[in-house]
Image (cartoon, helix red, strand yellow):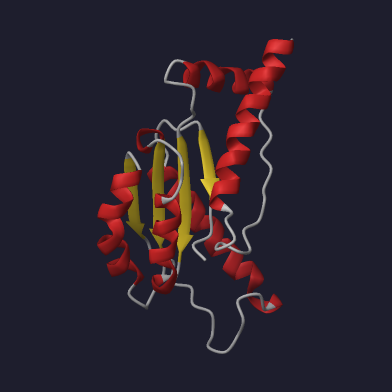
Length: 173
């Protein structure tokens, strides 16, 4: 019906606004990903959001590795979001870092808690390190690297997802 199409358009507009806010010129190489939901699932999310003020609950998930130098900017960009804190959650998984990433995450945790209703910080090492002087996109290491990345994302998703309507994956850099 026309009402369903209008509601669907509204949700896609909200998601687009959130993506655009997060994809400021500072972020640079963020990739756009498209998610497809069936109409029944979209209707359930619409009803849920309308009963809670009209905005969906969003979970931002970010797996990180040796990301200490990017974390302050990452948190500053999340702080700049125009999204209600009670409707925003953040989940970050630090995996196999050896540069102080975990320490820096806990230093920035208070700032994240001011702009998000819930913050989940996890540490999980998978034992994968790229050899020195080999770029992370080297074809010989892609299967192993992407396998670990998939495991990290799954671990983070299961640890951080609660009752959010949307999940937004964002790179730290």
